[in-house]
Length: 288
Ligand code: 7PJ
Image 1 (tube, rainbow, N blue to C red):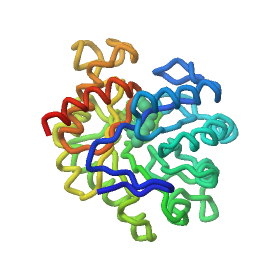
Image 2: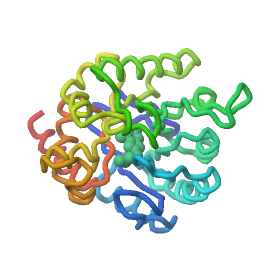
Image 3: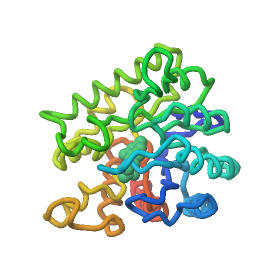
Image 4: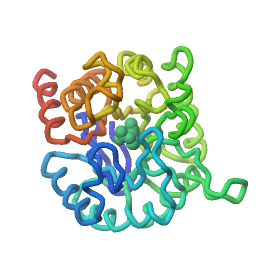
């Protein structure tokens, strides 16, 4: 099994580590230290030395309650980093939901579109708006990660999902993937992601990990993004989730969650701490 992307066929028979590159001054987990293009590029190079298989560049923080970033600002953050990052010899993903950003980065050679909105966000609205599904379908080979999100970043934690989330998330992702395939997108280009923390309670997030097999039954590879998420802080300290462990203190639970996700069949883990995750995954490889 492989993930077809613009320039690379990523072998998914062994787990892959996607390293997060936040090009945002307000990023909740790295405090904006990679806010400039040069610093972000240095971070890309470090992640590759640490063993990252894929880079994921994002210009807009989507943490709950984060303010939206304008199209111009997002392009100004992402484009200079992407230009250089595509020369580093690994597939480069761009974390965006804006069709105009998708269009620009695909033209510049981005390998993967990673969209928390699963290509639902429409520029300008109406029939004439640019749409992510059309852009991905018009591209010959880019990879796409479709993530489940309940509601939208500013309100998703106010009214989380109701009931058994696992079949709901699976149905949404299957439907999104099916719609893309109906437009001619090869199944090998599609990755699904349950969207840990996006409009779910702590218990619902852990149900998605415990029962990840039910998502895999949809027949697509799964990417898991647990890195430094607040659900991990709540479980560890038994205190209120977000207030307990700060983002930088969530390494150990992040590694545990990444390992469990891979052990339960995830093909890609999206993480901040690449070096430690690669080491943790070696333990799993040793017993496989
Ligand atoms: C995710 C993402 C995730 C995918 C973010 C954060 C918040 N993309 N982008 N999956 N999370 N595919 O990194 O904590 O879980 S932004």
